Amino acid sequence: MKRLAWILGVCMLLTASWLVAEDLIVNVEGQAAGSGPAARERAVEDALRNALEKGLGVFVDSTTLVENASLISDDTLVQTRGLVRDYTIEHESEQDGLTVVRVRAVISLQKVWESETLALLLRRMQMPRFVIVSTVEVNQNQLPPGHPVAQKLAEELVNRGFLLQELPKIHAMTKQDSARIVAEPALVAGVLPGLQAEVVVLASSRADFEKKADLYGRQMAYFSALVEVKAFRRDSMRVIAAVRGKAIRGAEQPEEAIHDALTWAAGDAAEKLVPAILTAWTEQLNRGREIGVTVHNLSVSQLSRLVDAIRSIEGVSSVSQRGFSLGKADLEVVSKQPAFNLAQAMENLPGLELKVNACTANHIRLKIEK
Image (cartoon, rainbow, N blue to C red):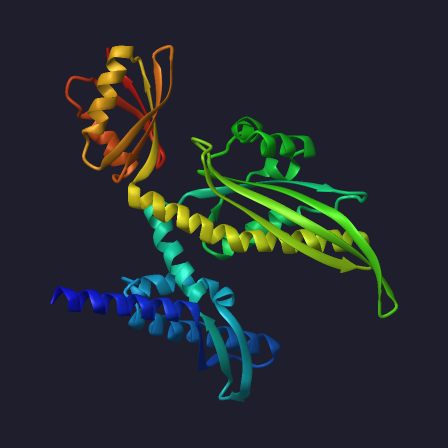
């Protein structure tokens, strides 16, 4: 019986893997009140949502990865455009005050899986917020207007369901400040007052002139771009994921070519960043959350007792000492319990009068009552 269950489990996993790797073609209808281009656009959007619901239904029925189809639908339907890889309008008509379209849509089950996985992981990670800092260097040309790398990374992360903290100073940040943060990530809190995001995304970008070429009588300038992105935990500055994106684009105006190359390279980096974060978070949750713990009014002898006592708490897999100075200890605790539960357990440790002063999803601050 156990062997049969194992074989069935392997078959289900193989089936799920095959489905995730494939696209699904569905034919659906959509409708919207009224007539004209605006109504047609709303009808197409309705059809694509219906296509995604149909695709999710197949996905839910064919795998064991999804626990609540309606909940996941709520999370992913807002990202319909990203999950529908392609579509064609096969028929459209107006009847009884409605615009009706019939659409043939190609659903990317890989993106459905990533979206579903991300939605569950974001909840389990207690919805961390992101902030993006970007610096750009261009060889032999002026920088294009705006912040194409930061804008593209923000757009891609938001489209996938990540939360961003908007800080006015980021947009007014000098090139020198951006470069300082990218070179020394620990400076981010000092340069950006009011920073509350749990994850800092640092992007270092460069665009280089490649060549000029004639294209159908037009003189085109070609630039290559490299975007290197690292995502850090703000509290410990530990790297969550590091990726690179590359692109080469051409245009008649060098500034336009630079802008396009940076944007495409940032998009390439974002495509790699999301699955890298998913993998890192999954591995972290499998072994437990990394929670920073700061304890004040502590002696050296109490520190040793405290570390041993924390290790005895249920769900704690490791305790590492990051520093000790002037009665303050900085620890890193890997725990399968959320930070709030761990903080309560630490307050109840016998023989140590610990009191919690502050607690966030990733950090606990306590002091010993003397």
